[in-house]
Image (cartoon, rainbow over all chains, first blue to last red; front, side):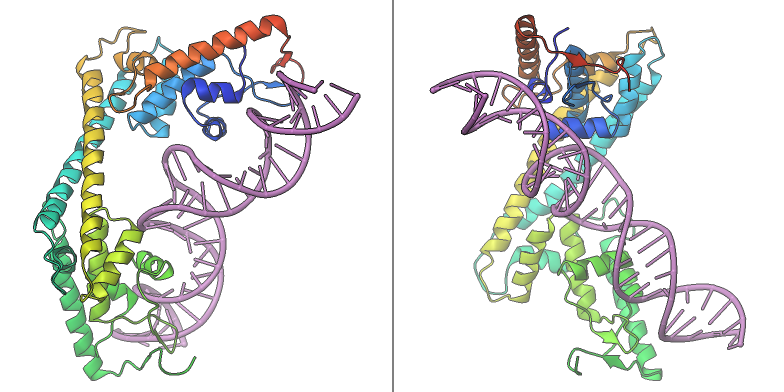
Length: 175
Length: 175
DNA sequence: TTGCCTCCTCCAGTAGCTAGAGGATCAAGC
DNA sequence: GCTTGATCCTCTAGCTACTGGAGGAGGCAA
């Protein structure tokens, strides 16, 4: 049977050598048989398996999911419900990431679109970060809520400090 | 001046306590002054600064970018070109991430849409991962190229092994 | 005083690799 | 046979941006 080295496998599957060792370490790839001089040897099946892993990673499947997918791939007789629910989950995760990123893009787009007039103290980007809630369509009680909470906490502290002294030690006094 | 504890600051800015210490550690927040019993004390400015950081993080700015943004925010007299190019870069990064995710979604969508007929050995998800290039519109010489490379490397190894013996030691022989 | 809460520092862990140190082995050319 | 450069080995640490826990000290109300 034709065997190849780890470097050749890396080239064949377009994956870095340390990544292959890493996959072996975390159990995605089985421990490779070794030569007498302790070098890993692989074959065609290894290329296929590593390719499988790489494609799954490209699709964003987390390692734990890939473990299950590999297991299912090794046992094609089993029902494939698990594979389908993993794919569905992954699809849902990708969908929600896209939505999040699109609302980010809207905010960033507005920031950038307002333009920079070069006037001192008038940077829209900084201004936006200073004041605006970043995006809270999805987070009830989000940024604005945080601002309110902030003010409430500070006011509270102010009230308390009138009654009992806080005795702060700041950077001025010695060290 | 009203001062608050780290816990109160955390609540005010809706950030976890260890995160605040972490931000201090990496220099996003200045070292907080301490009480006599070594507890950190904060004020309204801290709430604003932490809010600034939080909003920037929500927009996906990396920490290094936030460092620059904070610096610009501290010196409003400076030109804000840097802030704008950071925002533009971030917008571009978000855009490209969205594009990548959308092509992923297409592949995953096809996987899921073909449905599972429950027949053994016929799982479309596994099949797709086994064979199909995941998505290589953006990567010239991507998955298909890798398959070809794989075959070439294996063929090469086969040829070589005919000439010089490879003497592999596999799991069977002792140990 | 008791008990609970918050705070402190330090360390380890998360995901998925990637890079480097320091050393062994291999293949090719002379 | 010897040298040279490529490749391989293990082990460790680093990356991002936090998060959680251990073990101990301080603060506050009843």
